[in-house]
Figure (tube, rainbow, N blue to C red):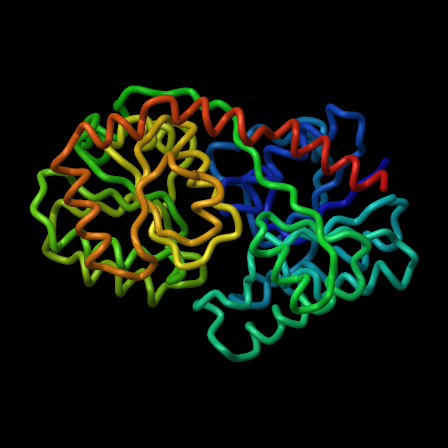
Length: 372
């Protein structure tokens, strides 16, 4: 079976949740006998971690093609999804798999050519604050309506998204959660050299720096408490330069708030491995890979009480009321001042999450959907 993947920036990559999913999932699908092609945006390049892993336009058996686009903020994804959809329509793919709502605006093109199309909704992207209420948000909402009407199968990541499509469009969807692989824990070496960080001396958040991720709540809450723990913010802009500027203004003058920028590979692994606790203060999620990674590394996790978080972590995390800075500050203070709470949350949480979410199970369910 031949499958084309459309809608991501670049594979292999950790630049975003979709890229992380496809970088992990696609090689497993290849191992299971599928012929998989990923259409990368021509404007994006693989980060240093993956340089040299793509040989002869192939990554771990996954074929790599470029979808032509312009490197223009707000338009690169739209143009790439259309050029990829047109190119794929003329190829002998059995299934064309679109990822994210915006790229699904082009899903009708392969449908005109009689192709079978699957859409994965990684989140209700039109709700993301960075797109505002103008053209971008309306375009993404158009992509949502297109996939709801024309996709042969729709994959969602949570019960909340399943309910949304059922209630809004009367559309049946299939829930296939993200997975997680067992990580390798690493001692603090690179992060000590680069950022002066040692084990258990910092609170970390790993995230794209966009408003719906709630990093501004975390900075405000952190400045309300007295602690010797540093706050490490690992991530970078995602077409959100103004928001990132605002975050850095909030943190100005506090040497204990550290912005690492985008990190991956051993540096990211060290941040997860040595954190006292992780925080996920999001207002909006599909199914957070950062949440899965935090627990897989055996970390104590404090996160917002949105259903997409509570359904995954269950009683193995501490929760605060979404958007409530005072409640977040209270929970931060409690966990910083009481190591026993942190140790209790760490206990067995890695095995809990690894047994619950597995990439090979995700691949099997995805193959079954393709065959259907």
